[in-house]
Structure formats: C-alpha cells, structure tokens
Image 1 (cartoon, one colour):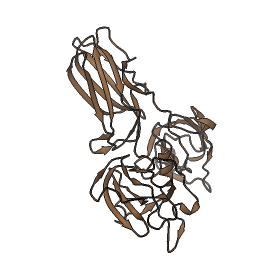
Image 2 (cartoon, helix red, strand yellow):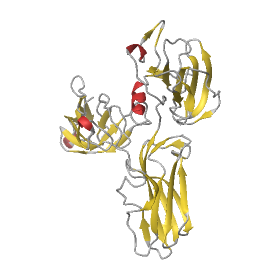
Image 3 (tube, rainbow, N blue to C red):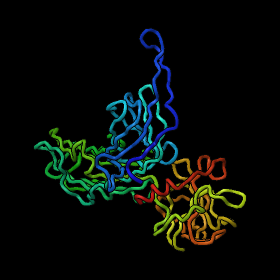
Image 4 (tube, helix red, strand yellow):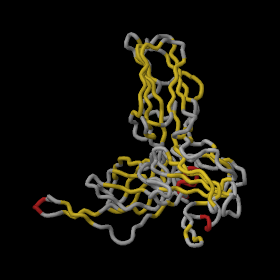
Length: 395
C-alpha cells in the first residue's frame, strides 16, 4: 500500500448548529472531512508512513481542526490522539506518533466536531532506537562539580507482560549524589510514566531498575520510552543523562502483542479469512499457514480460560489477555498445550506447536480474537488479520 490514501466519504459533509453567534442567530459549522493522507517527511521506502513520519492531510473544513486520532486496529486501547495545527481549511501537516499502528485516522475540532474515520492507513514501526546494552558515558548536561554518569539499557524491544523485562543500569563516578531520580518518559508526548528515587548514591556501584511494561496493574501504552537520570550532588550540582527532547538515548520500544508463530508463515487464501463461508456457519478467525511443529507463542500473556480438544478445533487453548478485555484463541495445535485452565502465561512464552489436529487439511494456526466478556461467554469474534499483520511487522 502506498503512502497516499484516499479516504473520501460519500455525499456532502454534514453541518452542525452552534449557539450564540453574533446577532443572536445560529452559525452552521461543517464537519471536517479528510480526503487524503500522504507521507511527506521522514518516510519509509516508497514514501510509506511510519512512526515519526510527517504526513500531509488534505480535505475540506479543516481550518478549526486541533486534534488527530490514530485509531489502531481494535478498541480504544491502542488509540493515540495528538494535537495539530491546521494550516488552512484544506490541509495541515501532522507528525505520526512513534506508537501509532495500522488503522484509520480522524480529526476533531475544539467544539467536538469530528470527521469520519478514513480507511486503514498502513503504518510501519519507527526505526528502532540505538542499542546501549553496556554502561557508557552520557552526553547530557552536567554542572562542573556534579557526579559523572554512565548509563545502559538492556534491550530496545520490550513486550508487555513478558518474562524478559527491560533493565536500566547507571553508575556514578567522581562524586557522590545526595539523590538520584530516574524517570521513565514516553516519547509520544513526553509525560513521566514512572519514577524511581535513590537517596545517597555512592560512586562506583552499578544501580539497576527493572520494568515489566506496566504502571501499577495496567499495561503501559505501546510506544517508545526513554530512561532519564537526574543526579544531584551533595553541593546541589546537577548532572542529567540526556536532554529533554532526546528520544534516542536509553530508549526502547514497548509492544502490546507478539506475533504468535515464531517461524516462517503465510496467510493463505480467501478461504482462511475471517467471515469466509463454512458449512452452517462462517469462519470466526484467521488461518496462518506454517510447517508442522513450528513454535507457537502467546501473543499476549494472561490466564488460560480453556485448554483441551474439540473435533473441529483439535487441540486448542484460549488465553484471557491480561488487561486487554480480549480473549486469544489458538487452534489445531500439534499436541495438547502443557497449560491448563487457570495457568498464568506470559507474552512470547511457548504454548504449543503448529499442527493439523481436528478439522484441518494442512498444518496451520487458526487464530481468533474475542471481545469482552470473552470466548463463548458473551463476547463476539472480530477480524484478527489487521492485528496479526501489525504484530508481524515488528515481532
């Protein structure tokens, strides 16, 4: 898919009455309408959109637009809204948030007039941050008598609810610190997500912080994050590990899900798509073809809701995704999953192998996503293909 996408809505844009216009009458404001979204700067190859790109948005009645929402693939959990400055009634530029994923976009005015959502825009991940796994001197600002800082971050790709968390390390040299504060900052809008304070830190010893991708019991929003250190010496002198605008030092990308097949795979034909006709019903998931015995991992950690065998599904397992409200179903496993109902699994943990058990003519994964309250508990299945392709692009 190219970077330019037409998202024309049928018919004229509706209008909305606004009270209190001069002269005591009403003013009719047209809803903004997006016609095209095109990558114009920091694009991927073939001018495709990726996190960090600048896109040009054209349409009608855009003069009052102040917000743009990247809606992701499902629900509101992966929506990202960013402020924008409208250049004119027919166009404006906007930066794609680093955490944005494939999905439609919409715009909104301060008066809550919203455009229709566009067709899905394919958004590639931003270039990965530079790895910094070992302690190295920092380039940040430092007062003359402040401690010197070295920092390092264990990995640049982190999955929410995985066993392998991200580890940040730092070490002082030259002087002691009265206090050291480590802030975890979102590169999307620069708020401090979490902070750690260490009093009376002596030089020479390596200090470490471990983060699992959660803030309290909730998963942090997917996107790029950076660790920033501020060390205050005993005389009040300050050393900082990085400038506030630097999103490259000690940075990593946090992802909410991992692609479930850790091997070569393809999506098959139309018959394996969500909604394809079946005898007496429609296909409720997406088939992903892979060789028998290839590794299957949990796309998202959580609690096992079901694990067993069914004549059609074969060996299968259903996981209630932690803090997502979504159930993840994996079917036709080569052998029964070692996990049972109630067990805890983690993102990226092996849950079985690709197989062809049950009503299957070839080895593949039949994968389903279900809305809350869950799989055959009142929820309903929805098309998992956009999510699978998004996870596939970075896993």
